[in-house]
Length: 441
Ligand SMILES: *Cc1c(COP(=O)(O)O)cnc(C)c1O
Image 1 (spheres, protein in one colour):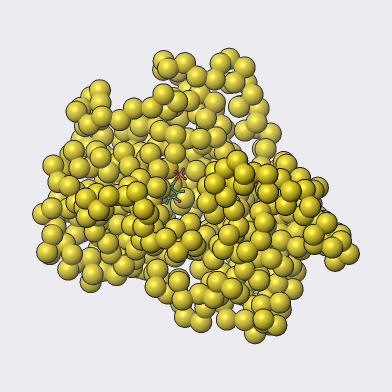
Image 2 (cartoon, rainbow, N blue to C red):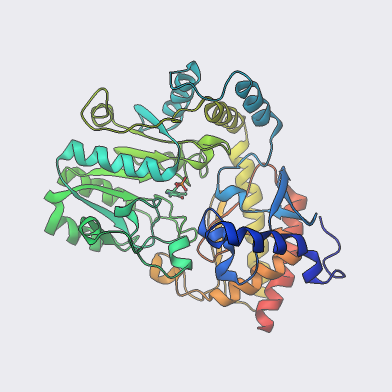
């Protein structure tokens, strides 16, 4: 880790990153290809990454950081894991894309179906956005209904109908929905507060017959980590059964993260469809949607609902995903993630308490968010009551101390198998300083 943080002036320390970002801003909106990366909400220039290994990333100035971004979720086995890289290289040498099926796609499909209890048939796509967008199209085709339901603060990618009260990036930037999205489309999207069964019951009573699907993060991760309250997902399952509505779990973040079989296996609930992404690509662009056979057979060419992709099921992405899933199936994997993450959570709580900082820490397995707020965080309203200026201070000290966090109060941190007791304890030591800085205002 970087030991120079106390002696090197900050401006020098980040000089190359700052210069490169300045140049990038001329070329790309915000100098980035996904908004949160621009560090806008925490008011600094982003670090530009040169390389990563294990739980460490190194920026273009040569500073090393313990990384809790993990590419926003995919890198559960760490950066540049030798088995994942070997699989990528081996596959790439034989060609990177064919527009014709490969055997790897069937291997990957079998692995996903085997892992996720409710998935009987699966289709691969290239991003989580495509997965949720396509799942909704199929659900609408299957039910012949047009309305969909999402939760306030839930993020399901940037498809038009889903960019309504959409958490993380949108929350951070204060854009509740986006210009360019026609009202005719968002009028088909109904909103519910997360973890609120009574509100869901009322909505289903009034409009249940018109609702094609409810899409929900079974563990919310895009307003920061917010677990489902006991019984909430069960209640939604029952309402969907009664109304003939397709229950879609968006497990793009929590799938293969909170358990190998995702949140649905952790909580024992069977959705009709599941969107997956992030981890299943092992750091390559890959996502998937799957579910009940009768629903999934609606998809072309088996059925009339059209969805396609030039690079879908890409062999290199399949190989990276397969290698990652194989590593996750090794014995003790999720227990280790749990142990490390609990150690981090306990350390953060103690550090906050010692510094006299109000903090609520939510965690499910290796997803966690410390919220700078006094009240428990159970939904979007309680999440957004957090002190984002305090988070920005915390983030800045952590970065200077050699720990890189997701640059928003409304993101989850990810612990990987490449972290260990030592790096967790270094993180906690840095957090002690960061909480003291928050307390000092
Ligand atoms: C990241 C994410 C998406 C979008 O995935 P992309 O690959 O960024 O398009 C969708 N849903 C959830 C829950 C996510 O966390």
